[in-house]
Length: 178
Image (cartoon, rainbow, N blue to C red; front, side):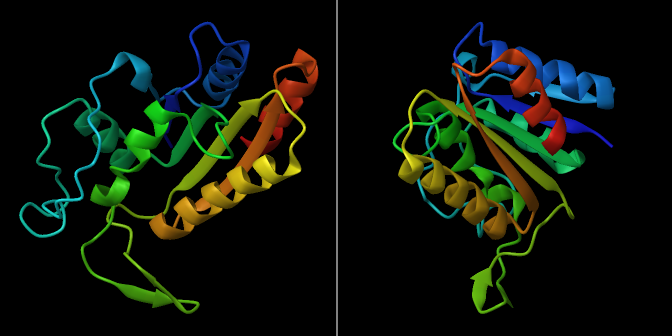
């Protein structure tokens, strides 16, 4: 088993530290990526990853390292601040490029037209953090993670953490999903 962590939290986040520490307790093989410190260009929706070079994006940037690690790994953990019910911009750029993790074919599953996973079954864990009390934003985030996992055909879990929560409560929430 190996875990890939895409940490899109702001630098020095105690939530990031708690998640990474907890993952290291469970798993020795961890790949940690911080997209804010990487050169990740936005998806151009050119379709080359489906037809020209299946499974490989033609954009030359750091995203290839992340995708290779996800392909080899079993668990994908994404950390992000919740922005308007969604991912932070630097995580969204990475997630938009996940098409490479799927075959350019379609399958119908429970009435949905989906791309089959190219690299087998995986588990997606999304940790969203924000300071607010909007149930709508929280529901939107949970639904976004669910839809992304559905498209990738990965198992998934998501948790929402408030920055004001006690660190022990945060660690308990993290332990419950990992």
